[in-house]
Image 1 (tube, rainbow, N blue to C red):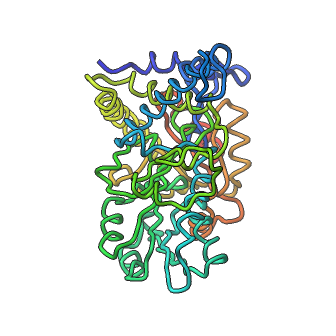
Image 2 (image 1 turned 180 degrees about the vertical axis):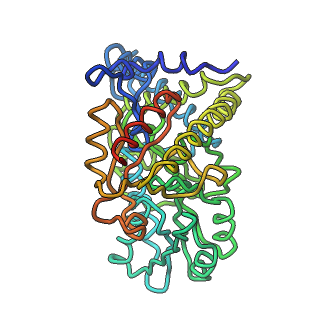
Length: 405
């Protein structure tokens, strides 16, 4: 039987925080979720009792090696790939820059990269940099502002025989749209292009399956799914081993470790593995992957109900404008909205005073936010997480209703 909401919430000490008389309701998960006790304990245990550098012949070094290997295995189960295809880094942005510079060494004038207007700029700026350095052309896929989804005709027109890579977000961190990534990857493959998927906003809500997506690279951020501030990347093994990565000669020269230049954030990597274990603990099954599948299936049902409650509630308020697809379309449980006559920062401050924490701005997805007409003040963003309750959704709606009046 999957874990109850009460059991899940008990694993998050942050939920004990109060703002005045109210317990804090955290809707800021799209920018970074709260950390489970299991994750914090794993990191503390490592730092206090096993802290060492790697590959030396004494106990704490060997323990470090084993813990890092276990974390790599956990992340491999999360991605549905082999452990050799996992790389860790500071964050998704840094990993993406690293990969883009390596791929770009063989590209130049006449080559093209496709990005989308829905994307976080972490999956736009690294590829734009190649336009400056290598003369590569970057083509932009437009979004349909009415639906919040990618324009299929624009996508098909952008991908040509000159395309070397298609960079796409699995889900929009600004307005919640889930893209048809497997279809886009197939479109890229038909012209011989690689695919790079930003799964930062997708991974907390839909279990990643790189085999089903068919992608060449995929990056995410464990701090968006109850872990520490690290980044994790899947890359097809043959591609990882072919990348022209700047590295020190004595460093590992094969598989995902080729991207991990220098001493890594050991406690962060171990915490990332513990975040996967936390998610797996919510579900049931004979293997960790099976438990993850069970957990995500149950969490999806809960999140859909919460988001529908939030979406419909916001839609009933005068002066509130919602952005992105409705609940019956592929999307994450993340609501982006504005309140007429009140800028997003003021809305956020007012809700925070009531113990409801939301985020505001363009969330580094500035292209789509500007196209929606809110490039200056931005949007208000509220995301449902595994610990979100219906009572918290109602508190958020009541706070927005007071501002809308």
